[in-house]
Image 1 (cartoon, one colour):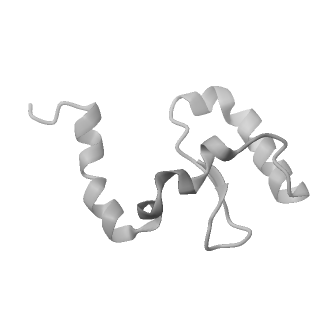
Image 2 (spheres, helix red, strand yellow):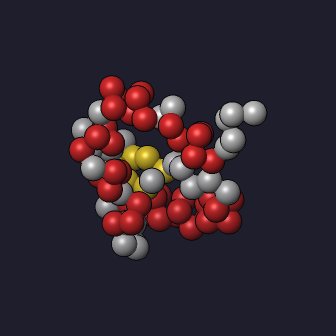
Image 3 (spheres, one colour):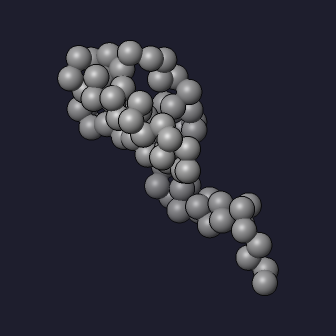
Length: 79
């Protein structure tokens, strides 16, 4: 995620890059700094927007329910 929080003007999020973040952190950091200082990231941030998760992406009750399912999709929790 790289976006300005929808309900907090001036609050920016740069998170969730996983292991790819190690190799991309300098570029994303520079883009975010440009966005904060100049008002323009200098690249298309559409693929990284918070709202790509839909209306439930900012619903705390929904997120608390579905977050339990995420590790099960990546790890064998039945051992």
